[in-house]
Amino acid sequence: MEDLRETYQDFFYYLDTVKVEISYLPKFREFLVNCVDADSGILLKNCPWSGKAFPSSLRDKWFELLEEMNLEAGEDEIPEEFLTDEWWKKRGL
Image 1: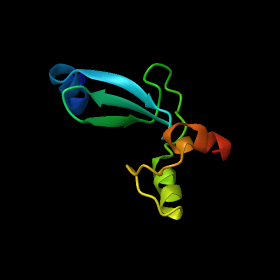
Image 2 (image 1 turned 180 degrees about the vertical axis):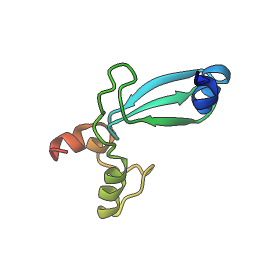
Image 3 (image 1 turned 30 degrees about the vertical axis):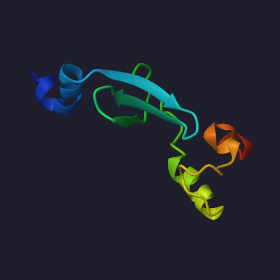
């Protein structure tokens, strides 16, 4: 019989050693498993419960559009719409 802890070592590592939480980042349209004890997260491509695929992340597109406007993340001049999901909904993405 398959040893699940051996097959899914990374998964069980996070379950056993690091507290995790699930979050949604609307501005990037990303679902993440956040590592509470670290400043990182793992992108989810499917719903852990239904298996249904999540929409693709728009993180790269977000940075691409800022670059086209000669802006960088973290700058005060970033348009308000880019701080929420408004920017991609407005563009039909």
